[in-house]
Image 1 (cartoon, rainbow, N blue to C red):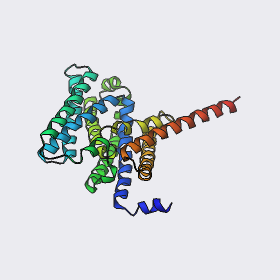
Image 2: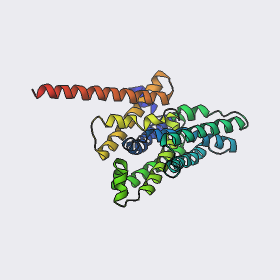
Image 3: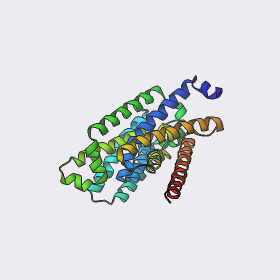
Image 4: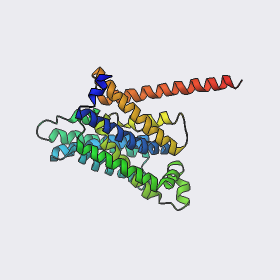
Amino acid sequence: MGTIIELFTYDFFVHALWASLFAAVSCGIIGTYVVTRRIVFVSGGITHASFGGIGIGYFLGLNPLLGAAVFAVLSGWGIQLFTQKGKVREDSSIAIWWSLGMAIGIIFIYLAPGYAPNLMSYLFGSILTVSITELWLMTLLSVILMVVFLLFYRTILYVAFDEEFAKTTGLPVNLINYLLISLIAVTIVLNIRVVGIILILSLLTLPQATANLFTKDFKTMMLLSVAFAFAGSFSGLLFSFYIDIPSGASIIFTLVALFGLMKIFKLVKTKLNLQGGR
């Protein structure tokens, strides 16, 4: 217990703890929309396409996260545009932007002078190296997401469950689509340092899958997703510290284990209820 308390005396651990909280809030909120809307693979396409922005950022000497944010948002818009206006199948559109982003990232990183020392932290995450600036950006994103979902909750709900019905009622479906795809892109980029490009999709889906075991209500699912995401992130952070393994992989492993435990709990509870009803 003393060792755990001592961890809170280190700035890097406190920063990582705050990053876990803000990642849980942002991914819990936007991930619920992603899962409900069934656009998990769209999010995966944006995630990998953002690597192109990281490569361009390195090449131009800019912050790679800035390049990733711009490229991720443009990729999200591109997937939407190709699918709606270009009449390209959604899976094909995702594949186009996914492969384009990865290819551009590899090319520009290769062309950039010197060595890209922090590249692995973008691919696999490094929550212990999250900076104060990144924490403020994650805080701002969490606030923006809460405000957007509070102001447009009913519209977002209609679009998430039945887009065609939302259109017939005159709701601004296209505006909501482009707004939320932009927020998904920014959420992905700002949480790359937590679990990395390779694993970020899990942070957008695993807490939601766990929450979905207990509720079908959209609002309750969001709240539970935030709680499960933070529980998994914090536990994974501690697990990585004691076992001395990469934090990103540890967080995802813990989230999977949490889902498994909750699934077993739900099955046992259901079985006991059935036996008690006899």
